[in-house]
Image (cartoon, rainbow, N blue to C red; front, side, top):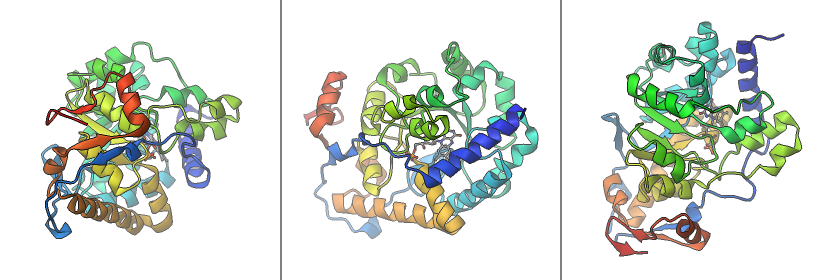
Length: 360
Ligand SMILES: Cc1cc2nc3c(=O)[nH]c(=O)nc-3n(C[C@H](O)[C@H](O)[C@H](O)COP(=O)(O)O)c2cc1C
């Protein structure tokens, strides 16, 4: 019988193999950013004059993007994390690690997440499943974060994935209270993240004033129900492949009730996705699968090229739209179209630009 730690490690390797080699994309759903239009400001700006930089935890970053938590917990994934970390530090972009459960179960694996030992100038986001808080007390989580010098903690909530995963755990009773208690008692700011199924306004509202950020990780990119469908070989996963709230809608829902930062991730693929997300109020945008793919193709240089291309693209798009800074972009007028408008109405979201009091 493999112990819990070996099973956790094996699962992480299987996940990477599936992500790199199989179709894990939503089929019938998109992020819905195609229904968001940023209204050009009318100003003439050269891309050389655009400043896409931003700050996180008072540290300057090249653009409000980050690498979503993916991996760690295995010698092979240490090599992946290391290459991503070197590129992230070089590009001045924050990086998340994957679930640190493997190192809680076996502390000899701590080095696979300890990216500040490789590059010290990096904003590092730790990660653990929210349901694990039923088992781990605050001291355990604090030690888990401190032993890799993490600056923030991303708590993932993933009921869709867990319901399809063969060894999945769908007992979330008591998790809400544990998240609120943990966020009050640990040093690092807490982010609640999904893994690609999105966060509704009902959930976001429960966390208002309790945590630092909500990272919606909505539908339209990688489907983790899809990933687990390959592992479970059951029909259930296939039927739920496309389950989830599109990222753009999830950002708008969360923004309507949550006063902290709302981050837009899940299916962020193009510079225009980032520009649109920022214009509808996202604080940051995270990318997962494309970073893993670029690491697999080109190592650290591949990830660096991916990040710098993305940042360049964001600057070009901001210039074309006439915004010199992220701050200016955040005050842009936005138009919504197609089914997004209808979904916003049905969800009770105001179809108007609250910042300027104009109707869309
Ligand atoms: C290989 C891989 C492993 C992942 N492992 C984790 C994890 O351990 N914890 C977590 O919160 N999210 C994990 N994710 C989910 C991502 O952080 C992200 O929420 C999801 O993939 C959607 O983003 P994308 O469409 O850019 O891929 C993983 C993603 C990938 C691609």
